Length: 279
Length: 323
Image 1 (cartoon, rainbow over the protein chains, first blue to last red):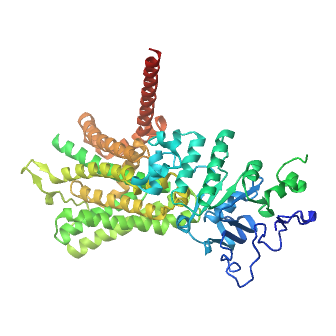
Image 2: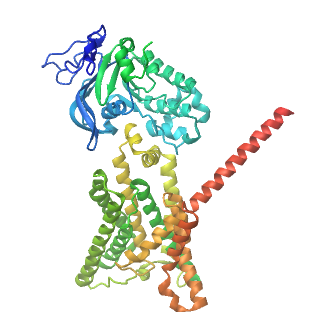
Image 3: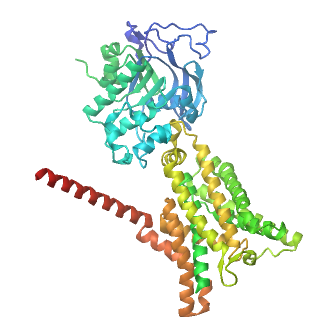
């Protein structure tokens, strides 16, 4: 079940869930857990559940960005977060990675509470995060960038999935094209073989061809390793075409979660929040 | 002439070591540390205590001063700078905090100096440990401090190169300096790295202080006297570059000693009190003409050279395809 919060008048649709009440969706065969279950305590009642966020309130200093958000994502699925600028998409990922101030609520990953885990330790919980911008060290060469995460000896091995970058191994990252830089950033976050991968607008400022390459890599990863991928995307069509589940955020609240096709069918939501004109 | 050479090279090398520390902490915290010379003066008094009070070789003071001044720098970072940064204090507040710490340390160093003099009857003001040094080759020979100072600077330059460019820890350090939050998301504990850098910076200053005491006169007031020279060295070289700091420190140090000597010959001894004017002129001239320092000039030249080499290579390849 997915839900609508702001526009509850349209009623429930198959694969869509109403927000504001029960936060957990059943779109992928999951059920709300009883209060005493691990899920209710923030744990994981579903073996496939990778991320569980409950009633999250967070922001930067005094500026509150997310106002009580519930969110979940599963292993072997791609979950997209869409919404307009300032809706809180990137903040959601940053909260997962300890990069913003969590005021209340809980964040669980693979059944473990990571709400207040420091950023540098989160990688140890099987989660990696690729930031939207400045996601590689510009002054370092490709080899050095990889050595930061793998150690010097294994730097080249980290390029296994990215043979297209091998010729540039000893070039400073600042000299790479936008697409090459995104591939390098992906190579860096994949080194630790994470079970959960968070991508913050990985196709931003890329040409359509490069954007397709990046999305293709993400889908390949998902297919090969069955990990949980959370994708924040400004390009809604791109995101909805490639995800299994979508969250629509507006002003720091979830206004829809569930099946991407259902979101596209909902003309109210699509026009109001995604800027899509009804056809 | 020999004395001027020794004076110039020892002073310039010590200054370069201090400039490296100042630039390192500036790169990491983006705060110019006005208390940096205090770490050196603490090292100076460690040398005095180890040699004149405890009776050990003055060179034993090198590791002791490294540890003591390193710990002081670590305390300053962890106990003051980091807390203020967490509170999102402005740069002005951070600079004032380093100035306040410097003033506090000058007080502490004066207490140490008076304590040593009153308790052990040892001269602790305007003192020098030059007479305790070994001279290689007898009277008129090479003082050991000269060799140790040059070796320390060369070792520092090579050691830092090895650390920063040949170890993954050093690469993480460079990464953390460039983009702290990215480093954290990649699992790097930036707090440990920054603490290490501050400890290293303070420790090096402490060692520089020991070497200063073995050639020049030591006094708590030296903290304030040397500060403009260190800032001038770092700015002339390029404030955020470690190798620029070495270059700038050497240049400013040599200019101060040799320049003053030349001016004495030309104008007379009355110019001596005006010696600090030299680093000020160097600093202002650099800021006006080349704000990025000498390293900016070198980087530009290297880039141009690389571009020219790439172009000529492309032309050669084009010619060979054409034939």
